[in-house]
Image 1 (cartoon, rainbow, N blue to C red):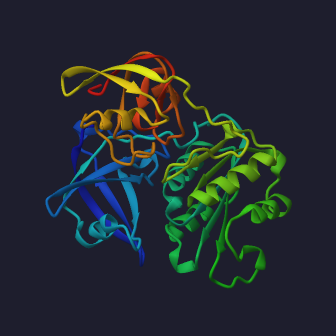
Image 2 (spheres, rainbow, N blue to C red):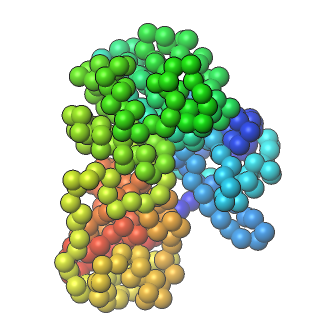
Length: 353
């Protein structure tokens, strides 16, 4: 994966635990850094002599002409703490081109109703989608249900409320607080299945809903996706952004498993072509490469980061849940080795492409 040096334009404190980092895109890199609302970029840092990478969702709309990401400090994430303590305007950061499949196509000539459910820093990619959609679609009704522990933890609060004023006929904003008393008890508590049922009964004309977006903790995404599906929204119209791998999201999904036991794998990596025999015991293609002593690229090993993306030249694979590959990527024979299992006895891949 290629990384490019971008200059930090500005660093803004959003909450006591989160910042927004604005990145300047030079003219010669504009074509490389075109993004779709909902996508993410990967930062590469050198910390204490160790090269580390992390993905952050883009929170700016495409019309804003620059890329911003929001980074929230957690108790265990030393990289987010490093960024907040060290990154400042004028610094250079190594950044990957945008990637990821979360989001919805723009439909400026249609009338439609969208609902989004978010919690904490899960608002980041949805923020980009909200702004882009409101800017381009005059006939949209966009409902956002945003959960936090308390009001002080609400990221983009001022910007969200400015959008609510600007698009008062199109954008409907609702906060939920799990650890703060609210005047209306309806908005006290976490976003869960019960809250969705109440929202459907009291706030949204559910028959008009075309698509739903969800981003937040894994359990919230799974619970809300299933209750939204149970209320009649097709799976293809329920979009979610997971920050950690899961085997499946919808309870009634059948997990595809490989039945191929012996595979001849030919792979090209760093300009060298090799062949190995893979005795498949249910592991991923990435694990098979690593077991055979191949220093194959990877980071998360769960279909989240895209570090192991490569091209399938020959043969077929079963791909598990991932946040990276788009329909176009799959059509162009892109795979992730970390979520790939064999479907044929022969497989040829190019890890340099």
